Amino acid sequence: MPQKKTNIILIGMPGSGKSTIGVVLAKSLAMEFTDTDILIQMDQQKTLQEIIDGQGHMALRRIEENVLLKINCRNHIVATGGSAPYSHPAMNHLGRDGIIIFLHADLPALKSRIHNYETRGLAKRPDQSFQDLFDERSILYKKYADITVKTSSHTQDQVCDDIILQLDQSPFIPLTSRLQREFNTIKAMVKLYCNEHHETEDIICNECSELVEYSRDRLLCCPFQEKKSTCGKCVVHCYKKDMQKKVIDIMRYAGPKMALKHPLMAMQHFIDSRKKPPGLSAHAGNSRTKLNSK
Image (tube, rainbow, N blue to C red):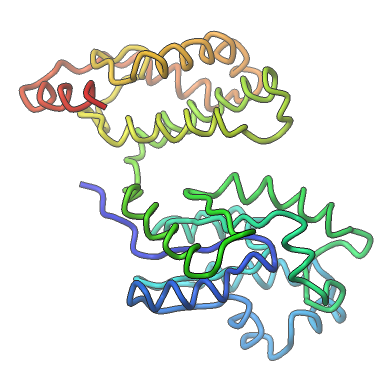
């Protein structure tokens, strides 16, 4: 049985409250607290701005990646720098034993909180405006987030209460490798559909994000785990009727496009689909009752 993750990873823009909320959250949950910007400065014996001034913003991102990849802890709140999601290896590393929470503050709130934009040590291009940086990073934050919590109009205590509530409701047990592969395929198809039908460019809208989260919940309950064929061939129909209709529409649209957009993923999905669907054991039959009640 997969184990629950032990760390909480906070991501978000500078000014979203990662460091301050991280400390309050650590006290509330009796966990340790780590601020990766401080780790970088201790490692380099320089401030973030001094690193940028001397070596450039890309050097800071490389240093940040190296520091993040060295993190090896349990039961910690980890507040990352705003540029952490630029590193896919680092985010994967943090996500192995960490629930990634995006602290989402809107642009007006961030501008009201940040008054030292040019000297804060932001890993950005010299000609990049704060608006451009916000737009660019928002896509990355949403990509890696397990949970999103809005912070614009809430106090620190309210944000912490919201985080704790969502953690209680969503334990985020990691999927097995087979189910993770199925989830990645579903998410890719939803994104293709959403980008075309909801004109969202490179992100997924709120309605489609709900479907993605729902599909993950269903996979967590799957009785077949590593023996699973594909959802389309499954003998257990675990989706609610409205969600089932949505996902069928999405698969009909996005399925034929997967070979072009995601050829490796499409090939692996085809291989998985050739597996004979396992039969329902007595245990799986009990699971079916639970699945259909959701």
